[in-house]
Image 1 (cartoon, rainbow, N blue to C red):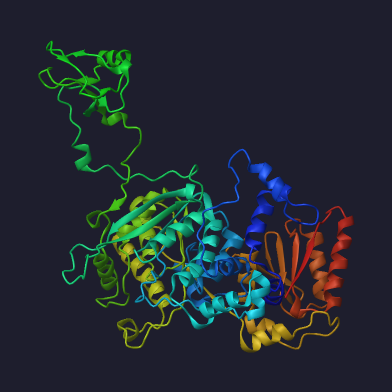
Image 2 (image 1 turned 135 degrees about the horizontal axis):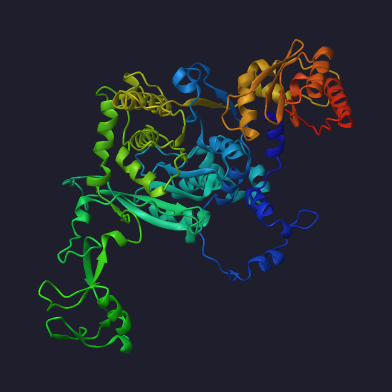
Length: 630
């Protein structure tokens, strides 16, 4: 497990993430030695794009380092919050809250949720100089490590180390922070998925460029403008800034369909029916166009006998034949007295799309402003302002609407903050009966002792987020007493091995054959944490639906295609019971037996494998894979 990952990470290169993607989607471009054949790749895509030596891309210090971070696997362990998860409102919940670094969380999520997330919203640090962003990662690379892994010189490697070790709020540092997270986010998105990223002027230009780089410029949907302030600040030195941005990208623009907004009373009132047309209310539009065509330049006689010509330099948008067809079908309007310039009737009942097309400016009257977001948190927390700058739930509900979710889609927010996104998802489910699920991720960022949140009893940001979800769920339940919505969530904590745990892992020698492990690594991590980590790794998600089975006096853990053997004590009686279970129970047929290598001798594992392999010759014809994890 951890030891395997540490050893694997030693051999990771900066381009491994991209190479693995190419191997998945263009396997024919690799030779028998695993080398990428660029000329063959060109032949695959030659009819779609013109490959040239020149290119346009965003370049910044540490870009290859960021790609390296995306390729490294996480060594964190997933620890369930058992007391919270076993509460009645949370036990069956499919909503998730993950406490930990979001880079680690995304890597865990990819193992079970790759290609499954329909909507991602994030509100990352804006790098304004006052938002506390200082890049400082946990990776302990030496100068030689970076020079080797990134194939760069000493001076460039030192500049990168200066960003990562001393901390920096430069544009390069911010991009280096965002890049791996956005790369992994893209892999999580479904083919029809969409991501929304809040930002302000300080980094919006860089964000647009890096998103073009990662998601593809062709998948850009819009840069929404959110009117976050409802009054100007008269003490502004130059301009009172009243807006932020929400950058919007699809995973595949051809597969994404925008969610449309409900029609407003005001919009419907633009339609009327002055001629009592049986097709219902309509509105009229100009019949002339700027683009001139001689075929569409003709005179029209109104019902009153008046002759009308197209305006100077313009022509009619309809050919004469099309005009006469519409005239015959009562789709041309000449005004109430039949003497006006002709216009085309467009019926409300015949609109091409249901709902209204969203616009790029999100006005605070429709989606709320920053003070509304703050007031929502204050009300939930009994008048206490425990979080600075939360987004209003109306804004998140608007973005979720634009994402055009299915009834059971998953919404991910890996900069969760006060958990506005989770609140919005629960509110929308209560309003329309949906079954949307949320996944929140938040770093346990410490709160300073002089802050109101600390004085209110909250010591880290994730505590505020979880408490908000609990309070928001209570409020929704009080307002919808008969609801059966999922208003709970399961909580998991990501923990990095350290101290004795890490020392035991590093010092353990898996080649010592018959020697039992003297270190109690199972006890140090806990069976629940090992199981949770493996379940996610093997694609089962953050599921607790694993069966505990007794094999004589030994406990094993079974779910679907996996039998997990974690604890010590696998004696002959236990092995005989496992073999008997495989042989006699027709419903028990896991294809993978997974050993926690620290708990077993080589002889124990080999003995069980030999006995199970003998069953291949029986009528059951078992095909079992054996996987030892460290």
